[in-house]
Each structure stands twice: as C-alpha cells, then as structure tokens.
Length: 78
Image (cartoon, rainbow, N blue to C red; front, side):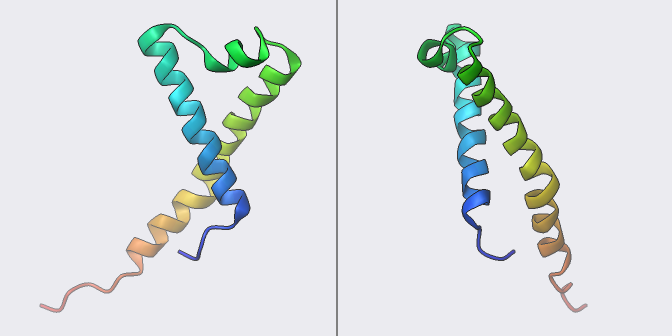
C-alpha cells in the first residue's frame, strides 16, 4: 500500500475519535460529542456524520488496498 495521504489520516483520526466516544458511551454513559457541542445540535450532527463518512471511506478505499497488498505477496516455494 502506498503512503497514506492527508484524507486517509483524517479518516483514521475521525474513526478513532468516534470509537473512543462509543467506548465512553458504553462504559460510562458519557457522550463526549454531546458534552462538547450539545445534544444533537447542528455541529454535533456534523461530527457524527463526518465520523460515519470516515468509516465508510476506510471500508471502501483503505481496506481493499490492504487486502490487495497481502494477496500480491508471493507464495513460498515448495
């Protein structure tokens, strides 16, 4: 896989932030996005949408590249 560009890194960061937020929600019933931006304000909704779009981007564009890289490795000789 080639080096990650700025969009790849941004998506990874957003997905990590989203995952940590879900950890807080599940473990402590504390929604960090809600605490920072308010309960479903426009900005909070934008944050949730961006995290979801970032996850889709990783699923559609990054993970297939990782799979191709592994498939392209030569098999050991018998």
